[in-house]
Length: 136
Image 1 (tube, one colour):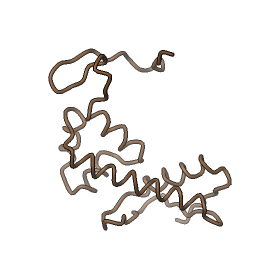
Image 2 (cartoon, helix red, strand yellow):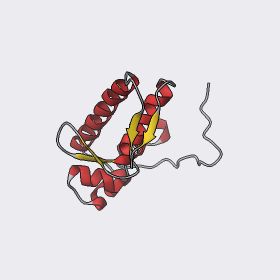
Image 3 (tube, rainbow, N blue to C red):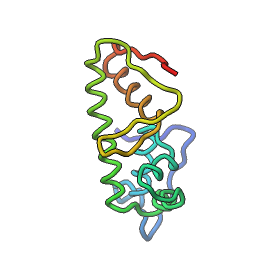
Image 4 (cartoon, rainbow, N blue to C red):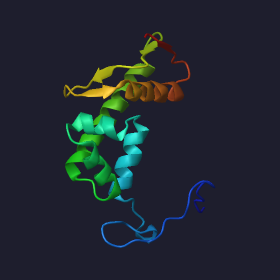
């Protein structure tokens, strides 16, 4: 079965250098970083703040090559997200969500309320009995 992109996308142009071409069969590291970051509900600015770096640095990584350590940091957020999804699915009552604010991770760093809403949303998709409520 061949994958056909949705109508709003375009076929990528093969490139040379640090970018993978469609024939390489892989995903360009910058694309991987951006897609994973956005899937977690994080803006580029949110991720830059999380790492304690400049927004322009994240933008450069996403256009070119993301360093291994940044991918490891993002993987840590993914791991914590999955763990929270599992906990939420076992929650006895409604899960609190916020329009604004921050969540403090195990490492002591902060993630925005948008990340928490994505985590809760994933739990609600996996377990339709999970409910949520606004608390702010």
